[in-house]
Each structure stands twice: as structure tokens, then as C-alpha cells.
Length: 471
Image 1 (spheres, helix red, strand yellow):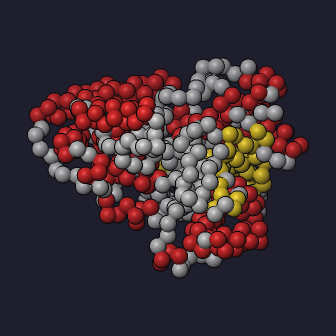
Image 2: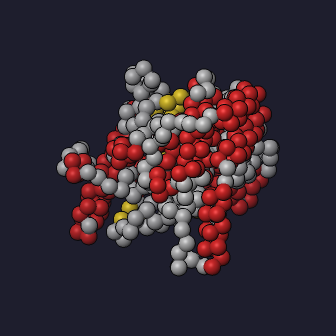
Image 3: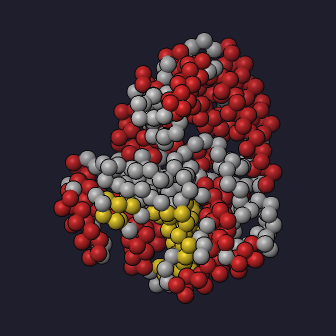
């Protein structure tokens, strides 16, 4: 039976206010019920977080949708664990070392906590910072008016190098976008400038010839394999792109995003902006270079990349280029810093830490190697680097603190890669105790896609909650 429809849990959720984010919501009773069921079954308990956490609406709310991003974590999951006083223990810090689009950070901020974030993708860090900042809407409106006048006046702007720009942009559109970006970059206030940079990034992707239905940039074009209706829709989209006015689209996005900020401010006007703690989950550090202190974090909620992960750098390549976060010729190097990438250089394949997993996973790697030696090396590297990230999590987690990990399993060369089992084994070896395992079916969210010809669909996620034991 699905947890989301269970009588016991439904009776419990009826006790909570239906208003999203009500300050007195405490999900501890629901969490304890799930733990009780898990202790009796000792296998992942089926749960529908959309039904369980019914005070969170699915769709556009607050600043969650301020910018598109692939494979977003369901906000219901983050909200559920953040609102459980039994594991947050009054602590005002919530860590996400793979922050992505900032779902955990925003939910933590809205709940009155201080989000700590890390990610190998600098665009993810910028997006999360903007998403969690309690901007003054009046200051944003004043800046928007300044931009409106400035964009009307400007006639030239520095050329911005974008990877394969002739594939993605009409020259006239690109010139108009460059003028908008020049106006944005001339804003004096750094924080406000970042808000408009994110707005600009939305428009830069929207006005490209990249297919909006695919996370990574793929040229929008008609195909014989598609239906007449689908090809007609593509043709209409291309015509719209050829006639769209970039400044009009920009201010439409600005207006929508200011309204999202207003919505978040009404709920939590004093929320804290996320604080970066590095770009590498294997080395969490403060801005002054000091390591994040040992045993300092009571609650971590994160969704690390899966084996054969989403191409996050490629998916955000246009934004990275436009916002000068990464030059076109450095995108491959940036991708090389990510855990879970699909390709490795010859240098990376010939070096690195030896794999220390259990015999079960040594055997799996050997079976993959027999089918595809390259995929075996990539998978081994992913598992080894994930182990290093989990060691760092152990270092920073307080005794009796909790780590919640959302992970999916996939296939490599037709063989089942149990990421959840591997993470559980490593965490238990490090000194964590698995207190809860849940399974939630994926309903789109950009995850049910084949990453490459050797990787299968991911149709469900496992949610693991682990507690750090005393040494």
C-alpha cells in the first residue's frame, strides 16, 4: 500500500494546516510512522510525497520556478524532512552538498534555517543564491525601470562568446540579447544584478533554437518520425523565435520573477540567502578557505548525481557562457569536475583512488568490464568519487545528526547499478545507521530519460535517512 494513501498517515496529515509553509507544521509524527513501518518491513516503504506532504502544491510557487533546471528534487521531500523537529533538533543550518537548482536550500530558507550549499556547477550556485535571497521588490522594480530606459538607449554591446552560437541564435537576436546583458551588467548593486542575470539567462535559453522540451541543448527541428501535429508545433515555435522581441520577453520574465519573490517574502520575509561552502562535495570549505568544521551539521538533505548522470554542465552551457561563468572552450574541463559524468579523459582513466567497494560491486564492475571496458572505468570512478563525498559528509555531520539522500538506480550495459545499496554500504561502514528507506515513483521531473545508450530509465527514487553514531 502506498504511504500517501494510508489511513494512519492521512489522519495525521489532517491535523496540519493546509496553508503552505505554516510555521507550526512539524512532520515528526509522520516521520515516526514511516520509521515504524520500515522497522517492520526492513525494505523500502512505498510513499507518494505529493500526497503525503499535501500542504506543498506541485507546480509554480515561491521562487522554485525562477529558472528551469533539469532533474529538480521534489520540494515535498525537502519540506518533509526539514519540518521534522526530531531530526533538525532546532539547528538552523541545513546542508546540501549537491545543491543543483536549490530546492533544498529554498525549503530550508523558507523554514527559517540557514542553507549551506556546494555544487561543481557555478551556475547552480548563482541560481540557488538568487532563489533564496529576500529581495526588496521595490528595489527590483526600480532597477527594472533603469534597465528599460538603458536598453532602449543602447545600440552596441560587447560580443559574448557562446558555444556553437550559429546553431542556437539568429544574429539579430543575439545582438539584442547582448545589449540587454550589457545593461544588466552595468547595474551597480551586485545582489540585484545577480537577480537580473538569472532573468536574462531564462530569456537567453528561451530565445535560442534549442528544443525547450529537452534539458540539454538540441536544435529544434521538424522530424519525419514525429506526428504532423508535433511538427506543426515545432514550425510555429520557430516562427515565434524569428519574430520575438528579446526586450519584451526579458521584462515578462522579470515581472514573473518579481512576483515569485513577493510570494516568498509573504511567507518568510527574513529568510536567509544560501551560503556557499565550496564547489566540491569532497571538500566542503568556507569562503575564507577553512574547512567546514567537523561534527558541525545536524541535517543534510541532498540528491547526488546518479551513475551516468544528467549532463548538468551541458544543460546549462548557454547560461554558463552568457553569464561569463565558463568560457565555451572550458566547458569540458568544468564537466570533468563533476561526479557522475559520462566521459573521462585518458589521464583520469589512468589515475585516481583504487575502488574499495564490497565484493558485490567488484563483481558488478567486472561484469560491466566484460561488456564495455570504458563504461566499467566510468562507473568505478563514479562510485569511488561518491565514496569520497560520503566520507566528507561523515566528517561534517554531528554525532546523532542525520543525512537524507535521494538517489535513483539505473543500468549500465544492461546490468543493474544499485546506487542506493552502494551508498548504504559505504555510509554504514563510515559509522551511520540506516533508520529509514522510502521509495517514491518519479512523475517526470526530467528524470525518466535515457542518459546514454548504455544507461536505462530511472523510474523511482530511494530516499535514505541515516543517523551518525557515536564513535
